[in-house]
Image (tube, rainbow, N blue to C red; front, side):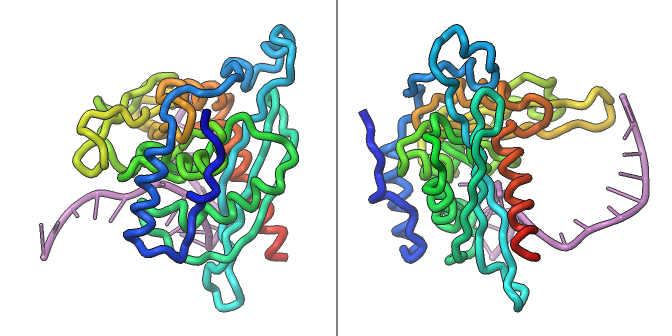
Length: 263
DNA sequence: GCGACAG
DNA sequence: ATCTTGTCGC
């Protein structure tokens, strides 16, 4: 049995070395295997829930946008959270916090973690699963933003990235057919034995035409979810677009909320 | 020194 | 991430 780890929350005041040390602690505390009670098949299908009796699981998507001050500098992050249940949006909340550090590859959660946790605090429903825009275990120290947030809150989580931070796909990832996956394993840049399964390249959508193709998503376990389940869930939740609905809706909401603040 | 580098 | 209209293709 695991429990929340507020002591591992991101702290932008730490030195780079301290941040990296904290990430190794997070990776140690993380569970990269299925450890949840809901049925993944009920995440998007409302009909599958009637037979199982209880309420469908609450799936949450998280994404960020950035606000600019009078001088034209990005000084605040806006984190948008959208909760869905049985395919329907049940709640949307957001939070704005000051930006404390610049974007540094590998340290994303120290830049965006605070607004995310603040936004999740505003949620009245309890998430059964959270999808993040960014990596989970596909990370130099196996502690991407999805892993960090999942461990701090002790909620099952998945990282959904649009590009690959590190690691090596075990095969060609160009022009994959929709529904297919390619394993991503650790390489020398990752703090794990070479060949460790980190996640999957996941092709949720693909063009029919031969001259152009859509790049896959890079899906990896955050916390309490195994790599195969993470890929399966991404495919299941990508009902009509490349991105799984929860992250796509959070993406849109982050822009909407930003615009309404600029006015 | 050179290259790689989520959002 | 963000600046942003039209435009190519099904």
